[in-house]
Structure formats: C-alpha cells, structure tokens
Length: 302
Image (tube, rainbow, N blue to C red; front, side, top):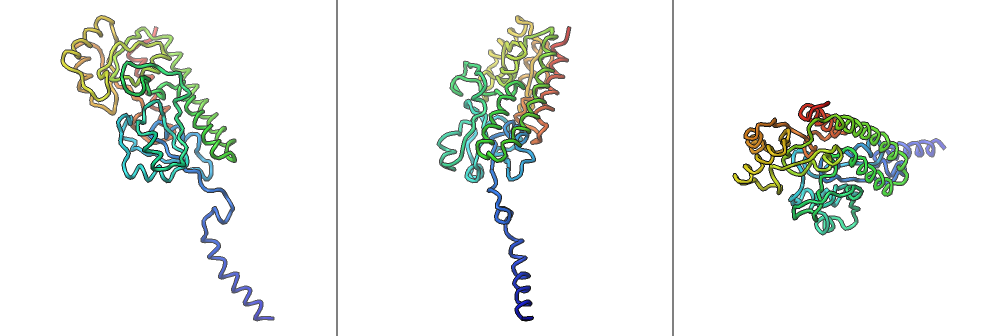
C-alpha cells in the first residue's frame, strides 16, 4: 500500500514540471495568438491603439519607423518572413504600398490584407502613380478616425472573441482623434492666410479639411527634384498668390525648400506627416498637435 502511495506521488512530481513547461495555449486551451503586421508607422500607431492590452494579439511594424512613406519600397527577405508569420496585414492602401498584391501573396497566400484608406473619399492627383489618387489619407485627423475604424473591423473579424475589447479601444482612440479634429477646425476658422506651399502632396487631405489652398509643391513628383526654372516659377507663384509659408517635412532635406522660401521672402517651417518618428501609441496625436501649433503661428488668427 505504501509503495502504491509513494509511486503515485512520484508520478505527480514527475508530471508537474513537464506540464508547467508547456505553452500557455496548450495549458489554458486559449486560441493561438493573432499576429498583426502593420506596413509603416502610421498604420502601426493606429493598430497599436486598437489592439493594445488585448491578450493574445501581437502587433509588429514591418518597415523601420525611420524609413518614411513606402512609395517605391521593395520587400526584403526579412519583410517576407514577417509577412509569412502574420495573420493580418494592415496597410494604408490607395497605392501607398506598391508591393501589395503578388509579392505579399507569394510570401503568405493566407494572409488578410486590410487597406484602411478605402474608407476615405479620395483626392485625385495629376501624378501618374497611385492610380491617380493621392494616398496620404492619414494626415487628416478626420480621415484617421475612418482608418482606425477599418482596423477595428478587421481585428474583430479575425478575432470575434475580442471584438468588444477592440471596440472599446477604438472608441477611446477615435474620441481623442475627434477632439484633435475639433481643435483643427476651431483654429482653421481663425486663419488669416490660407495659401501655402508644401514639399509634396502629403498634406492635401488636411488642406481639404481646413480650407487651405496648396498653391505649389517643391516636388510635384515624389523623389524628383525641380529644375532651376521650376523653382523660379514656384517663387513667382508664391508672390502672385501671396502664399504665407513654405512647409518642409522632417524626413527630407529642407535645402530646396529653404531656397524657395528665401527667394520668395516667406517663412520656412516644418510639418510632420508622421511618416517617420517614434513608434508609440501617442505619436500621431503628438505630431498633429505640433503641426497645429506651427499652422497657428504661420497662418495667424483673427
């Protein structure tokens, strides 16, 4: 009898460490982790805010936060590995990530691609790329809310058990973005000046919301520097339209923007579209409030 008792105790002691060493999914019966991959920084920030704190959901950033807009980006072997390991791929879309489609499908035929910008009313562009649509939708706080809701919908469809948590997170974040949009609206009503020059077409959606006219751009085609004649033509346009400022972007050199602003006699300032920066949940709100302070300084208030 004593032998049987000691034998049973020995079995329990032997089984304990083995059972404790198993993955949590096996021990608790929980579903496998939902692996979400975001294409570049703004999409990562939006997704982190919706998925934050939800157990079993991981969010990874594919492109380095220092890279900028992925207009002509080519996937690396490391990117392909990240795609192969993911369940959801959160992208901006509208031609921003030109590698969407066959390259991603080859890396992971089962992955679900979510193009969050599809919810935003488009702005047509004269440029030949991106299907004739401006893809920089997220720079408008009002558009950001639409894209956050697209993220929420995709995460809830992929993990219905967590839908309530995703909705609560998205509601809280959307409320903060709505407050940010209201701050922009209130400031825009008091702007004395409404004509500006930007580095390229990244601020067109914001300009539409704020009633600002972009009278020219340093680079009409992304990555293509203007000629001397084009610079002089832009300087004349600034003078003719009485544009109040030239805006550069932190991820690009401001050399050409400084030349244009200097010749036209207008201020040069920086506006940040959050194409680069800190990969933190509050990064979008911080960048957009800094932009708002810059706009109020340059465009003035009545």
